[in-house]
Image (cartoon, rainbow, N blue to C red; front, side, top):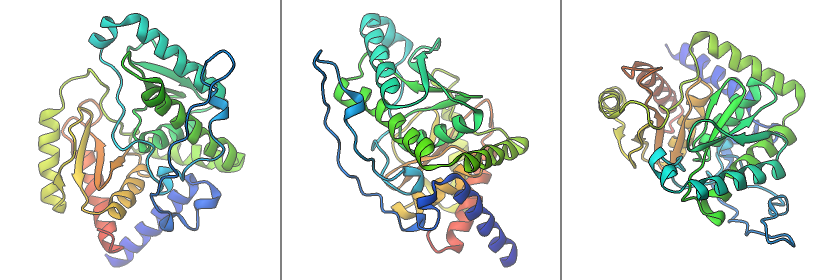
Length: 303
């Protein structure tokens, strides 16, 4: 049993190193979740935000153990909120799209789904990497093939939520396109493809989908029985939170889940995993995944 667990830890480490930029591969366990502070907005002569002039550098990736860009999850607006302020919603969507075009090499446009913009990636492997990385920055992200949906809403403020979305794309594309070479990108895509043959990427249920309250209750109780981790944190329809009791454990388990094809993120010591009534209607997959990575975290004496 010990040999099998040691092999599982070694395999996990290999798969994690595959998706991390090279500068993190040998030191990711030493990265501290310390923020550099927020960059202020800059404006051009026409009074518009000069998104491409704001950042000279970025905090460490949350994927590598750095601080998530947001402390809590940024979610999309509801259809009712959009219907109440359609002009302001259009203004917000246009500005998010303008910002993303200025700070990244990805195409972006308004999504046919309310409350979101869509980013078009060069390949599914890139989309798979970005959706994991952006979710770990606590910005809602959903992927289908090579298209990612990001949140928007009429209540989004320029210096807050709009900036959050643009920053999350600027930061993650900076690391993916600027710090990961072509050969490694191919390896990332191949790793994701292999994982998909076992089970599709487990993402949170989409906003507006069926209620997840019963699913969250059952899965939460099952995880608590298996691991002792208690449900906690803010309530989000598509997510189930567990208190890992310390930040190091939450970070380690988050990364372990992500390379096991389960989107995960954290808010301080709370680890969030998907509650998806379509892909995991009884919560069995997410319970099994959390229990397995918790066991490995105990082996490493992190949890």
